[in-house]
View 1 (tube, rainbow, N blue to C red):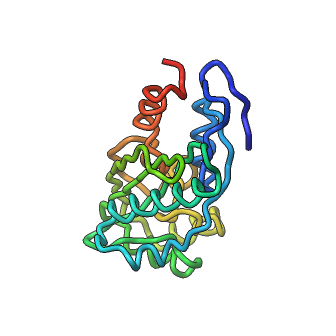
View 2: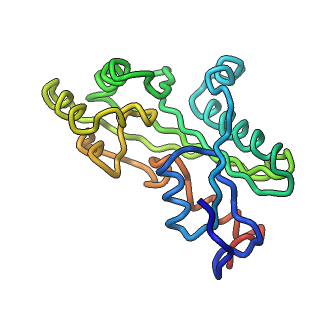
Amino acid sequence: MRIVRGRLWLAEQPLILASRSESRRAVLAGAALAIEVLPADVDERAIEAGATDKSPDAIARLLADAKALAVSARHPGRLVLGADQTLGLGGRVFAKPADLAAARAQLRALRGRTHTLHSAIALACDGTVVFAHCAAAALTMRNFSDGFLEAYFETVGPAVTASVGCYQVEAAGIQLFERIEGDHFTILGLPLLPLLAYLRGAGYLAE
């Protein structure tokens, strides 16, 4: 997706989004940012395995940096946004489930408990990270029944494996929760207000 320069976006070229996430694309487009989607091709599991700090926020920051830098290396002079999100619960870091069976097991582990989403962003230009930010949100799942869980899987289908938490709060996934504490955009995987503040200060957006 490519949007030309407008009254709010001041740069000659659009921001590159190094992500396949439809929710992140929609957030940026909704905020009237000029964007071009060029997903990063990085081995996330290998990056996680090589990390010295295994905490969920550190992993999210590391992956966001890696995605931004990978695409930046191929597009000199362009501003590239990398983003990643991890889920932490009781010292365990969850990744996107590999299949429906893994998603079912993950939701059973999360139900009735409070987990934390860590959403990191990194902006890179010419192979250097020029801005980075990580935010967290706490989400408490209700103690839903196995019957509800199966109905949820029938409703959502394969999309349940598309996110680290097996849900989209902007869709049917909201029915999993009894309490949510944190910024909405952080939950969607892109802490938007800090990003916009940096872009304004750097002259990419109108002030």
